Amino acid sequence: MPDSPGDQHGPAVPQPILSEPVLPEPSTAPGPRPNTKVVKAVLITAGIFVGLGVLGAGALGFVTWYFSRSIHNVPSASFTESDLGIAIYPGAEPSLRGSRGEFAGKAMLSATYFTRDSAGQVIAFYKEKAGSDAHITTTSHGTGIRLSRAKGDMTTVQVMSVPSGSGDLTYIKIMRVTEAAGPH
Image (cartoon, rainbow, N blue to C red; front, side, top):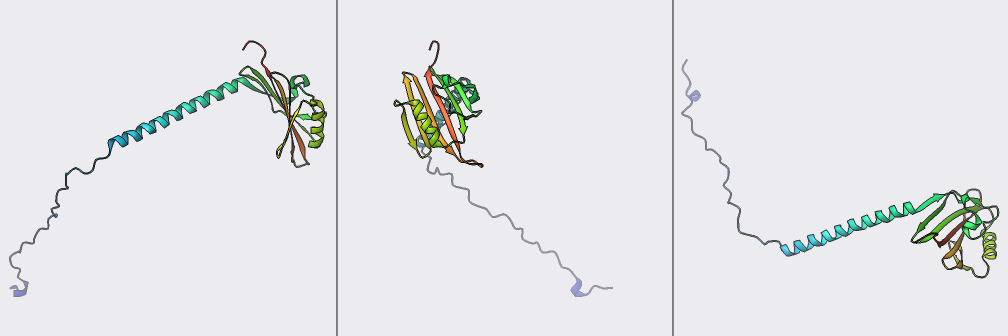
């Protein structure tokens, strides 16, 4: 069967090939250069701050280590009135938070006690025991009584009222600093 004239295909017509657009080369002209003196100054300054931070952290670590070897936690019940340099309030309960240590030629100790008596009663007791040489300071946080007996021997008593679930407690902290025994 003969082909109809509409079914005949003529010679193939070449189609145009699309190519990538040609972009101009980027300019290689030098742009503004960063100021190398400023960059160096910033880097040197940053290095100094980092170095000082490392030295400071090392010094803090050494001081913490030194104090941890110098100060020892002991129960407050282990101290006598002779150790503290002043009487312990009658009926006061010792806490477990006491400490003893030596540092820079000084012997230090600290003891903590609690009582249900009012802060006023405790302060009156310590004022009587300390005598007229006592230096008394009252702040919004409590009352401090400082007694210096001799050069290098000082006892401080802090008295505060502390609210608790079963009524107010009176907190008593006694600290004593003396010359350390032995060679310095």
